[in-house]
Length: 345
Image (cartoon, rainbow, N blue to C red; front, side, top):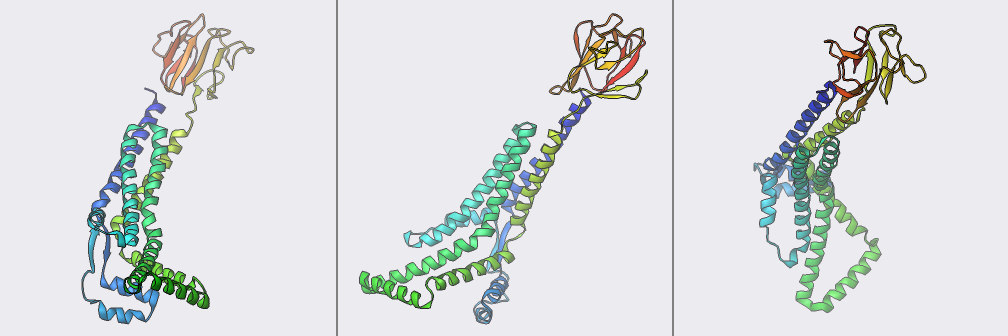
């Protein structure tokens, strides 16, 4: 087997194995802790966003408690959200639930698909698909950290608004709701329109962001790190795989000893300068002695002997005349039985 081809196959196997290991480890992180919220985390986030309000929150939450929410694995988060039964009055909470589940399922699903395709696909396609899907998996998981604060703040504000309107309707009917909406619109016009609502949403978003910064644990970040590492490995593998294997002929003896010739196409060896690319003198060299080319698909050199005196292996065996022989990289041939030596690759 061609040395260069064997090396490429070995590299492909190594990089493929590394990618599979990283992807499987990423998939396993769903059983690791993704989040853990303690009372101190709540107090810290409150102080960071709302300032002095923290001292009142501290009276409500016992700072000495170990955990406000127990450490939860990725799969545990999914179980809890799926078990969470919500009626039509909790549409705002459903949006948060749906968002988190969607991000987790897309991330883990893409990882599982990537593992299978990395094993099944060959070389370049394997690297390209793994690169795209691993990045997609990391992005899907990162969406929780990036967009969850906005989703939660919108859901809370909408939920409060719907609750207020619902309570008013229960007590004073639809006419009371209309009056309240009119009054709110007038009040908002006086104090700056939607600025108050946007400010509240911003505060809640900052609070959730601060909380996530402190409470997302190693399982969550390890998953993203592993997907990033998989993408990097696939890029390196793709770069190495796309490097063109340049075939060469090395002249080992004779007048051109030490010369190196790139085999971009057919190389004709012989004495005739009009037809030959590698011109060699000698009694045993024919005008058109032999043709040498390279097959990049197989990694083998193709040698066709046209000569009278023959083209030989170093063991003295002659190549078949007017027949194309496939030779491995590293093979040494003689131009004539005792002629100059050429090394292929």
